[in-house]
Length: 225
Image 1 (tube, rainbow, N blue to C red):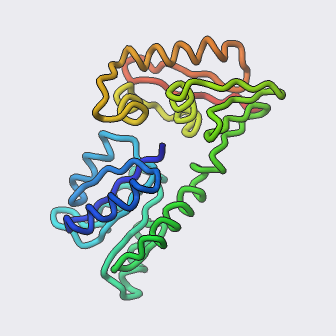
Image 2 (cartoon, helix red, strand yellow):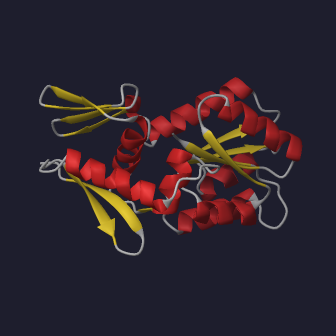
Image 3 (cartoon, rainbow, N blue to C red):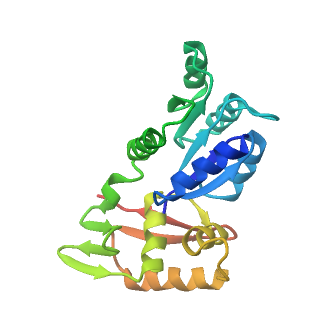
């Protein structure tokens, strides 16, 4: 459900991180340097970045600075062989959220990722609460005033993703890739069908709505009192 971008120029380290992180329930994208990372950032929705510093073309410092200049609040975990206090200080000054040194302790990296996601209010106990409405990720359920609906898996994932980032526009392609997977033969019509089902299911609910942004995609809007 949560998408992590690993930016690392060493192929062995990059593959190791990708394997460890994906085995713990995350979807992982990879890039070899900051330039590739920018391309991935534009192409996919990313929840967190694990970032090396010393890379060709664009290093981790420059990449982080660019991301923060765009006013993106995405969590960034720098992972580097540079261990001097000045290196860490520079990382935090350009905008990283956390910093750990190589060689990477896999368990520590996973704990830091989980903490950063929690701090960013992305995980939030795998529940979203909007007024009297509770979305439970583990149960695939939506509860309102004591009445619970259990949704089909993909339908729930679409709703949960949209409500995790209220007012953020998701393209149909992003939703297709994230919910159905890159290798799926799903078309944008499938996304439309699921959106329409969700609208019909929650028609008249005052807590939230799914809005079509013409020519771009969809976004969820919360109406908390």
